[in-house]
Length: 275
Length: 161
Image (cartoon, rainbow over all chains, first blue to last red; front, top):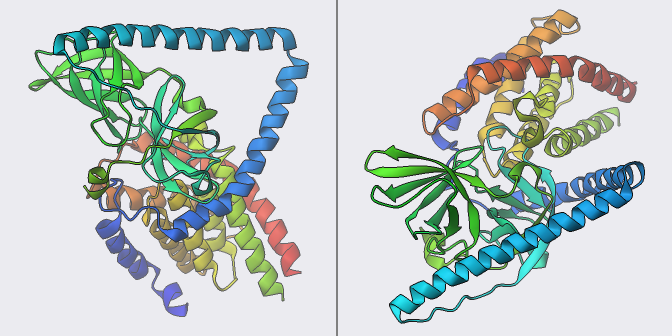
Protein backbone atom coordinates (compact mmCIF):
# COMPACT_ATOMS: atom_id res chain seq x y z
CA UNK A 1 0.00 0.00 0.00
CA UNK A 2 2.86 2.34 0.78
CA UNK A 3 4.27 1.68 -2.68
CA UNK A 4 0.89 2.50 -4.20
CA UNK A 5 0.72 5.75 -2.27
CA UNK A 6 4.21 6.79 -3.26
CA UNK A 7 3.89 6.03 -6.93
CA UNK A 8 0.32 6.87 -7.97
CA UNK A 9 1.35 8.19 -11.38
CA UNK A 10 3.37 5.06 -12.17
CA UNK A 11 0.47 2.83 -11.12
CA UNK A 12 -1.93 4.89 -13.20
CA UNK A 13 0.30 4.56 -16.25
CA UNK A 14 0.41 0.77 -15.76
CA UNK A 15 -3.39 0.65 -15.38
CA UNK A 16 -3.77 2.87 -18.42
CA UNK A 17 -1.58 0.46 -20.42
CA UNK A 18 -3.88 -2.40 -19.40
CA UNK A 19 -6.91 -0.29 -20.30
CA UNK A 20 -5.69 0.39 -23.83
CA UNK A 21 -4.97 -3.30 -24.32
CA UNK A 22 -8.14 -4.82 -22.98
CA UNK A 23 -10.92 -2.24 -22.96
CA UNK A 24 -13.28 -2.05 -25.87
CA UNK A 25 -16.86 -0.93 -26.31
CA UNK A 26 -17.30 -3.57 -28.95
CA UNK A 27 -18.86 -6.92 -28.33
CA UNK A 28 -16.55 -9.28 -30.17
CA UNK A 29 -14.13 -11.31 -28.15
CA UNK A 30 -15.62 -10.32 -24.84
CA UNK A 31 -16.28 -13.03 -22.31
CA UNK A 32 -19.93 -12.47 -21.53
CA UNK A 33 -22.09 -14.32 -19.12
CA UNK A 34 -19.34 -15.30 -16.69
CA UNK A 35 -20.58 -16.49 -13.34
CA UNK A 36 -19.20 -13.58 -11.29
CA UNK A 37 -20.94 -11.00 -13.48
CA UNK A 38 -24.14 -13.04 -13.22
CA UNK A 39 -23.73 -13.08 -9.45
CA UNK A 40 -23.40 -9.27 -9.36
CA UNK A 41 -26.52 -9.02 -11.52
CA UNK A 42 -28.43 -11.29 -9.13
CA UNK A 43 -27.12 -9.36 -6.12
CA UNK A 44 -28.41 -6.06 -7.49
CA UNK A 45 -31.76 -7.61 -8.43
CA UNK A 46 -33.40 -7.37 -4.98
CA UNK A 47 -32.79 -3.66 -4.28
CA UNK A 48 -33.59 -2.75 -7.88
CA UNK A 49 -36.81 -4.73 -7.72
CA UNK A 50 -37.66 -3.14 -4.37
CA UNK A 51 -37.15 0.35 -5.79
CA UNK A 52 -39.19 -0.63 -8.85
CA UNK A 53 -42.08 -1.88 -6.68
CA UNK A 54 -41.97 1.15 -4.38
CA UNK A 55 -41.85 3.71 -7.18
CA UNK A 56 -44.49 1.77 -9.08
CA UNK A 57 -46.75 1.79 -6.05
CA UNK A 58 -46.25 5.52 -5.47
CA UNK A 59 -46.86 6.33 -9.14
CA UNK A 60 -49.95 4.10 -9.12
CA UNK A 61 -51.41 5.78 -6.05
CA UNK A 62 -50.79 9.17 -7.61
CA UNK A 63 -52.28 8.22 -10.95
CA UNK A 64 -55.24 6.24 -9.66
CA UNK A 65 -56.41 8.41 -6.79
CA UNK A 66 -55.16 11.91 -7.37
CA UNK A 67 -55.68 12.06 -11.11
CA UNK A 68 -58.96 11.30 -12.84
CA UNK A 69 -59.38 7.57 -12.39
CA UNK A 70 -62.06 7.02 -14.99
CA UNK A 71 -60.41 9.08 -17.72
CA UNK A 72 -57.11 7.34 -17.22
CA UNK A 73 -58.58 3.85 -17.35
CA UNK A 74 -60.65 4.69 -20.39
CA UNK A 75 -57.64 6.23 -22.07
CA UNK A 76 -55.55 3.15 -21.30
CA UNK A 77 -58.25 0.83 -22.64
CA UNK A 78 -58.60 2.82 -25.87
CA UNK A 79 -54.84 2.96 -26.34
CA UNK A 80 -54.64 -0.81 -25.95
CA UNK A 81 -57.45 -1.21 -28.43
CA UNK A 82 -55.74 1.07 -30.95
CA UNK A 83 -52.51 -0.86 -30.49
CA UNK A 84 -54.30 -4.15 -31.09
CA UNK A 85 -56.12 -2.81 -34.15
CA UNK A 86 -52.91 -1.41 -35.58
CA UNK A 87 -51.20 -4.71 -35.03
CA UNK A 88 -54.15 -6.53 -36.60
CA UNK A 89 -54.15 -4.18 -39.57
CA UNK A 90 -50.45 -4.67 -40.02
CA UNK A 91 -50.81 -8.46 -39.86
CA UNK A 92 -53.56 -8.37 -42.47
CA UNK A 93 -51.44 -6.23 -44.72
CA UNK A 94 -48.50 -8.53 -44.14
CA UNK A 95 -50.67 -11.59 -44.87
CA UNK A 96 -51.91 -10.06 -48.11
CA UNK A 97 -48.41 -9.29 -49.31
CA UNK A 98 -47.18 -12.67 -48.22
CA UNK A 99 -50.04 -14.34 -50.01
CA UNK A 100 -49.20 -12.55 -53.25
CA UNK A 101 -45.56 -13.46 -52.91
CA UNK A 102 -46.31 -17.07 -52.19
CA UNK A 103 -48.68 -17.30 -55.09
CA UNK A 104 -45.91 -16.06 -57.35
CA UNK A 105 -43.45 -18.52 -55.94
CA UNK A 106 -45.95 -21.38 -55.96
CA UNK A 107 -44.73 -22.36 -52.56
CA UNK A 108 -45.93 -22.28 -49.01
CA UNK A 109 -44.16 -21.02 -45.98
CA UNK A 110 -45.23 -21.51 -42.35
CA UNK A 111 -44.60 -19.13 -39.52
CA UNK A 112 -43.21 -20.78 -36.46
CA UNK A 113 -44.20 -19.43 -33.08
CA UNK A 114 -42.22 -19.36 -29.82
CA UNK A 115 -43.07 -19.25 -26.13
CA UNK A 116 -42.65 -15.88 -24.46
CA UNK A 117 -41.96 -14.67 -20.92
CA UNK A 118 -43.22 -11.23 -19.91
CA UNK A 119 -40.95 -9.06 -17.76
CA UNK A 120 -40.80 -5.63 -16.17
CA UNK A 121 -37.97 -3.18 -16.79
CA UNK A 122 -36.62 -2.52 -13.30
CA UNK A 123 -33.45 -0.53 -13.96
CA UNK A 124 -31.22 1.00 -16.60
CA UNK A 125 -27.51 1.29 -17.24
CA UNK A 126 -25.59 3.41 -14.71
CA UNK A 127 -23.19 4.54 -17.43
CA UNK A 128 -23.62 7.08 -20.22
CA UNK A 129 -21.12 5.16 -22.34
CA UNK A 130 -23.64 2.39 -22.82
CA UNK A 131 -26.95 3.89 -21.83
CA UNK A 132 -28.97 1.70 -24.21
CA UNK A 133 -29.07 -1.16 -21.72
CA UNK A 134 -31.97 -2.05 -19.42
CA UNK A 135 -32.37 -4.64 -16.69
CA UNK A 136 -35.47 -6.83 -16.55
CA UNK A 137 -36.82 -8.84 -13.61
CA UNK A 138 -36.64 -12.28 -15.22
CA UNK A 139 -33.57 -14.48 -15.42
CA UNK A 140 -32.29 -18.01 -15.92
CA UNK A 141 -34.87 -19.45 -13.54
CA UNK A 142 -37.53 -18.34 -16.03
CA UNK A 143 -35.82 -20.08 -18.92
CA UNK A 144 -34.04 -17.02 -20.28
CA UNK A 145 -30.62 -17.41 -21.89
CA UNK A 146 -28.08 -15.15 -23.49
CA UNK A 147 -28.94 -13.93 -26.98
CA UNK A 148 -32.72 -14.38 -26.76
CA UNK A 149 -34.74 -11.64 -28.49
CA UNK A 150 -36.78 -9.15 -26.48
CA UNK A 151 -39.83 -7.35 -27.84
CA UNK A 152 -43.00 -5.50 -26.97
CA UNK A 153 -46.30 -5.87 -28.76
CA UNK A 154 -45.16 -3.01 -30.97
CA UNK A 155 -41.93 -4.56 -32.15
CA UNK A 156 -38.35 -5.59 -31.41
CA UNK A 157 -36.65 -4.08 -28.37
CA UNK A 158 -33.27 -5.83 -28.22
CA UNK A 159 -31.66 -9.02 -27.02
CA UNK A 160 -30.41 -10.58 -23.81
CA UNK A 161 -26.78 -9.72 -23.08
CA UNK A 162 -26.20 -11.12 -19.60
CA UNK A 163 -28.34 -13.47 -17.54
CA UNK A 164 -28.51 -13.63 -13.77
CA UNK A 165 -30.64 -16.04 -11.80
CA UNK A 166 -33.49 -13.57 -11.31
CA UNK A 167 -32.69 -10.70 -13.66
CA UNK A 168 -31.16 -10.13 -17.07
CA UNK A 169 -29.51 -7.35 -19.01
CA UNK A 170 -31.05 -6.38 -22.34
CA UNK A 171 -29.09 -4.53 -24.97
CA UNK A 172 -31.49 -2.37 -26.97
CA UNK A 173 -31.54 -2.23 -30.78
CA UNK A 174 -30.51 1.42 -30.49
CA UNK A 175 -27.16 0.52 -28.91
CA UNK A 176 -24.00 0.99 -30.98
CA UNK A 177 -23.16 -2.71 -31.00
CA UNK A 178 -26.64 -3.86 -31.98
CA UNK A 179 -27.39 -5.07 -35.52
CA UNK A 180 -30.51 -6.73 -36.95
CA UNK A 181 -30.86 -8.27 -40.41
CA UNK A 182 -33.99 -6.62 -41.83
CA UNK A 183 -36.31 -6.07 -44.77
CA UNK A 184 -38.28 -3.10 -45.97
CA UNK A 185 -41.75 -4.58 -45.55
CA UNK A 186 -43.30 -3.16 -48.72
CA UNK A 187 -40.56 -4.04 -51.19
CA UNK A 188 -38.53 -6.75 -49.37
CA UNK A 189 -35.35 -4.71 -49.88
CA UNK A 190 -32.80 -6.14 -47.45
CA UNK A 191 -30.33 -4.35 -45.20
CA UNK A 192 -28.88 -4.21 -41.70
CA UNK A 193 -30.49 -2.10 -38.97
CA UNK A 194 -27.77 -0.77 -36.67
CA UNK A 195 -28.03 1.19 -33.44
CA UNK A 196 -26.57 4.69 -33.28
CA UNK A 197 -26.76 5.30 -29.56
CA UNK A 198 -30.11 7.07 -29.62
CA UNK A 199 -31.79 5.72 -32.75
CA UNK A 200 -31.34 3.28 -35.63
CA UNK A 201 -30.14 3.37 -39.22
CA UNK A 202 -30.69 0.80 -41.92
CA UNK A 203 -27.54 0.31 -43.98
CA UNK A 204 -26.44 -1.63 -47.06
CA UNK A 205 -29.70 -1.14 -48.94
CA UNK A 206 -28.95 -1.49 -52.64
CA UNK A 207 -29.04 1.76 -54.57
CA UNK A 208 -31.78 0.46 -56.87
CA UNK A 209 -33.92 -0.59 -53.87
CA UNK A 210 -37.34 1.03 -53.54
CA UNK A 211 -37.32 2.70 -50.11
CA UNK A 212 -39.36 5.68 -49.05
CA UNK A 213 -40.29 7.53 -45.90
CA UNK A 214 -43.08 5.77 -44.01
CA UNK A 215 -42.05 2.25 -45.01
CA UNK A 216 -42.17 -0.32 -42.23
CA UNK A 217 -38.97 -2.21 -41.43
CA UNK A 218 -39.24 -5.84 -40.27
CA UNK A 219 -36.74 -8.46 -39.18
CA UNK A 220 -35.65 -11.02 -41.77
CA UNK A 221 -34.82 -13.77 -39.25
CA UNK A 222 -31.55 -14.41 -41.05
CA UNK A 223 -29.25 -13.10 -38.29
CA UNK A 224 -30.05 -16.08 -36.10
CA UNK A 225 -31.18 -13.94 -33.16
CA UNK A 226 -34.53 -12.44 -34.05
CA UNK A 227 -37.56 -14.30 -35.41
CA UNK A 228 -38.62 -13.21 -38.85
CA UNK A 229 -41.24 -10.58 -39.66
CA UNK A 230 -41.30 -8.72 -36.38
CA UNK A 231 -41.67 -4.95 -36.69
CA UNK A 232 -38.52 -2.91 -35.99
CA UNK A 233 -39.70 0.57 -36.89
CA UNK A 234 -40.56 3.05 -39.62
CA UNK A 235 -38.30 4.76 -42.16
CA UNK A 236 -38.20 8.50 -41.45
CA UNK A 237 -35.38 9.62 -43.73
CA UNK A 238 -33.33 8.24 -46.61
CA UNK A 239 -30.02 9.29 -48.10
CA UNK A 240 -27.46 7.94 -50.56
CA UNK A 241 -24.33 6.60 -48.91
CA UNK A 242 -21.62 5.48 -51.32
CA UNK A 243 -23.03 2.67 -53.44
CA UNK A 244 -25.88 2.10 -51.02
CA UNK A 245 -28.92 3.78 -49.53
CA UNK A 246 -29.00 4.57 -45.85
CA UNK A 247 -32.35 4.98 -44.08
CA UNK A 248 -32.98 6.40 -40.63
CA UNK A 249 -35.39 4.12 -38.79
CA UNK A 250 -37.53 5.24 -35.87
CA UNK A 251 -38.56 2.37 -33.56
CA UNK A 252 -42.34 2.23 -33.13
CA UNK A 253 -42.10 2.29 -29.35
CA UNK A 254 -40.32 4.75 -27.06
CA UNK A 255 -37.29 2.77 -25.89
CA UNK A 256 -36.47 5.37 -23.24
CA UNK A 257 -39.65 4.68 -21.33
CA UNK A 258 -39.98 0.93 -21.60
CA UNK A 259 -41.95 -0.63 -18.79
CA UNK A 260 -43.00 -4.10 -19.90
CA UNK A 261 -41.38 -6.37 -22.43
CA UNK A 262 -41.60 -9.97 -23.55
CA UNK A 263 -38.63 -12.26 -23.95
CA UNK A 264 -39.08 -14.62 -26.89
CA UNK A 265 -37.74 -17.99 -25.80
CA UNK A 266 -35.86 -18.57 -29.01
CA UNK A 267 -32.26 -19.65 -28.64
CA UNK A 268 -29.83 -18.04 -31.07
CA UNK A 269 -28.76 -20.35 -33.83
CA UNK A 270 -25.44 -22.03 -33.09
CA UNK A 271 -23.63 -20.59 -36.07
CA UNK A 272 -24.26 -17.08 -34.73
CA UNK A 273 -22.88 -17.84 -31.27
CA UNK A 274 -19.76 -19.33 -32.81
CA UNK A 275 -19.04 -16.31 -34.99
CA UNK B 1 -14.01 -3.48 15.41
CA UNK B 2 -14.31 0.12 14.24
CA UNK B 3 -12.32 -0.72 11.14
CA UNK B 4 -14.67 -3.56 10.31
CA UNK B 5 -17.68 -1.22 10.67
CA UNK B 6 -15.99 1.30 8.40
CA UNK B 7 -15.35 -1.32 5.72
CA UNK B 8 -18.94 -2.59 5.96
CA UNK B 9 -20.22 1.00 5.72
CA UNK B 10 -18.14 1.71 2.62
CA UNK B 11 -19.16 -1.54 0.93
CA UNK B 12 -22.84 -0.84 1.62
CA UNK B 13 -22.53 2.76 0.42
CA UNK B 14 -20.78 1.61 -2.74
CA UNK B 15 -23.58 -0.88 -3.39
CA UNK B 16 -26.26 1.73 -2.64
CA UNK B 17 -24.75 4.25 -5.05
CA UNK B 18 -24.60 1.68 -7.86
CA UNK B 19 -28.26 0.79 -7.27
CA UNK B 20 -29.33 4.45 -7.17
CA UNK B 21 -27.43 5.17 -10.35
CA UNK B 22 -29.10 2.31 -12.18
CA UNK B 23 -32.60 3.30 -11.06
CA UNK B 24 -33.36 6.92 -10.08
CA UNK B 25 -30.26 8.54 -11.55
CA UNK B 26 -29.79 6.40 -14.64
CA UNK B 27 -28.35 8.29 -17.64
CA UNK B 28 -31.09 6.60 -19.65
CA UNK B 29 -33.51 9.07 -18.07
CA UNK B 30 -31.26 12.02 -17.21
CA UNK B 31 -28.83 11.99 -20.16
CA UNK B 32 -25.43 13.58 -19.60
CA UNK B 33 -26.79 15.52 -16.61
CA UNK B 34 -26.88 12.43 -14.42
CA UNK B 35 -24.81 12.72 -11.24
CA UNK B 36 -22.11 10.05 -11.20
CA UNK B 37 -22.60 9.03 -7.56
CA UNK B 38 -20.05 6.24 -7.85
CA UNK B 39 -17.35 8.57 -9.11
CA UNK B 40 -18.11 10.99 -6.27
CA UNK B 41 -17.85 8.10 -3.82
CA UNK B 42 -14.46 7.05 -5.20
CA UNK B 43 -13.25 10.68 -4.91
CA UNK B 44 -14.36 10.62 -1.27
CA UNK B 45 -12.47 7.37 -0.68
CA UNK B 46 -9.35 8.81 -2.31
CA UNK B 47 -9.41 12.06 -0.36
CA UNK B 48 -10.70 11.05 3.07
CA UNK B 49 -10.71 7.31 3.68
CA UNK B 50 -8.05 5.94 5.97
CA UNK B 51 -9.43 2.43 5.77
CA UNK B 52 -7.14 -0.21 4.38
CA UNK B 53 -8.80 -1.99 1.51
CA UNK B 54 -10.37 1.21 0.12
CA UNK B 55 -8.61 0.47 -3.17
CA UNK B 56 -10.44 -2.85 -3.36
CA UNK B 57 -13.76 -1.10 -2.62
CA UNK B 58 -13.02 1.41 -5.43
CA UNK B 59 -12.16 -1.48 -7.76
CA UNK B 60 -15.32 -3.38 -6.75
CA UNK B 61 -17.40 -0.28 -7.34
CA UNK B 62 -15.94 0.04 -10.83
CA UNK B 63 -16.58 -3.64 -11.49
CA UNK B 64 -20.26 -3.35 -10.54
CA UNK B 65 -20.52 -0.38 -12.91
CA UNK B 66 -18.94 -2.50 -15.64
CA UNK B 67 -21.38 -5.36 -15.13
CA UNK B 68 -24.49 -3.18 -15.08
CA UNK B 69 -23.36 -1.16 -18.10
CA UNK B 70 -23.67 -4.00 -20.59
CA UNK B 71 -20.57 -5.88 -19.55
CA UNK B 72 -17.95 -3.22 -20.26
CA UNK B 73 -15.50 -5.31 -18.28
CA UNK B 74 -12.39 -3.40 -17.23
CA UNK B 75 -13.45 0.05 -18.33
CA UNK B 76 -14.73 1.41 -15.05
CA UNK B 77 -12.76 -1.00 -12.84
CA UNK B 78 -9.43 0.34 -14.10
CA UNK B 79 -10.41 4.00 -14.38
CA UNK B 80 -11.88 4.10 -10.86
CA UNK B 81 -8.89 2.30 -9.34
CA UNK B 82 -6.54 4.63 -11.15
CA UNK B 83 -8.45 7.70 -9.97
CA UNK B 84 -8.44 6.41 -6.40
CA UNK B 85 -4.66 5.86 -6.43
CA UNK B 86 -3.92 9.29 -7.88
CA UNK B 87 -6.15 10.97 -5.25
CA UNK B 88 -4.63 8.87 -2.47
CA UNK B 89 -1.17 9.93 -3.60
CA UNK B 90 -2.21 13.59 -3.70
CA UNK B 91 -4.18 13.55 -0.46
CA UNK B 92 -1.02 13.78 1.66
CA UNK B 93 0.02 16.98 -0.15
CA UNK B 94 -3.27 18.90 -0.09
CA UNK B 95 -5.71 20.14 2.53
CA UNK B 96 -8.72 18.03 1.63
CA UNK B 97 -11.03 19.60 4.25
CA UNK B 98 -11.16 22.87 2.33
CA UNK B 99 -14.31 23.35 0.23
CA UNK B 100 -12.26 24.82 -2.62
CA UNK B 101 -10.05 21.72 -2.68
CA UNK B 102 -13.12 19.51 -2.75
CA UNK B 103 -14.68 21.49 -5.61
CA UNK B 104 -11.45 21.32 -7.62
CA UNK B 105 -11.02 17.67 -6.66
CA UNK B 106 -14.49 16.69 -7.85
CA UNK B 107 -14.24 18.69 -11.06
CA UNK B 108 -10.77 17.47 -11.98
CA UNK B 109 -11.56 13.88 -10.97
CA UNK B 110 -14.46 13.78 -13.44
CA UNK B 111 -12.18 15.16 -16.14
CA UNK B 112 -9.45 12.66 -15.22
CA UNK B 113 -11.87 9.76 -15.25
CA UNK B 114 -13.30 10.69 -18.66
CA UNK B 115 -9.81 11.44 -19.96
CA UNK B 116 -8.69 7.96 -18.95
CA UNK B 117 -11.70 6.38 -20.68
CA UNK B 118 -11.46 8.69 -23.68
CA UNK B 119 -7.81 7.98 -24.44
CA UNK B 120 -8.24 4.27 -23.70
CA UNK B 121 -11.23 3.89 -25.98
CA UNK B 122 -10.16 6.29 -28.71
CA UNK B 123 -7.30 3.93 -29.49
CA UNK B 124 -9.69 1.09 -30.24
CA UNK B 125 -13.27 2.20 -30.82
CA UNK B 126 -15.55 5.14 -31.40
CA UNK B 127 -16.14 7.52 -28.55
CA UNK B 128 -19.32 9.53 -28.85
CA UNK B 129 -19.19 11.85 -25.86
CA UNK B 130 -18.11 15.40 -26.57
CA UNK B 131 -15.87 17.62 -24.44
CA UNK B 132 -18.85 19.87 -23.72
CA UNK B 133 -20.77 16.93 -22.30
CA UNK B 134 -17.81 15.94 -20.13
CA UNK B 135 -17.62 19.50 -18.80
CA UNK B 136 -21.37 19.43 -18.08
CA UNK B 137 -20.94 16.21 -16.14
CA UNK B 138 -18.03 17.69 -14.20
CA UNK B 139 -20.26 20.58 -13.11
CA UNK B 140 -23.11 18.25 -12.11
CA UNK B 141 -20.75 16.02 -10.13
CA UNK B 142 -19.24 19.03 -8.36
CA UNK B 143 -22.65 20.39 -7.39
CA UNK B 144 -23.99 17.03 -6.20
CA UNK B 145 -20.66 15.95 -4.73
CA UNK B 146 -20.32 18.64 -2.04
CA UNK B 147 -23.49 17.78 -0.08
CA UNK B 148 -22.81 14.09 -0.64
CA UNK B 149 -19.31 14.50 0.84
CA UNK B 150 -20.85 16.19 3.88
CA UNK B 151 -23.29 13.30 4.27
CA UNK B 152 -20.69 10.54 3.92
CA UNK B 153 -18.26 12.40 6.20
CA UNK B 154 -20.90 12.58 8.92
CA UNK B 155 -21.59 8.87 8.59
CA UNK B 156 -17.88 8.13 8.55
CA UNK B 157 -17.31 10.24 11.68
CA UNK B 158 -20.08 8.38 13.52
CA UNK B 159 -18.61 5.00 12.65
CA UNK B 160 -15.11 6.20 13.60
CA UNK B 161 -16.30 7.47 17.00
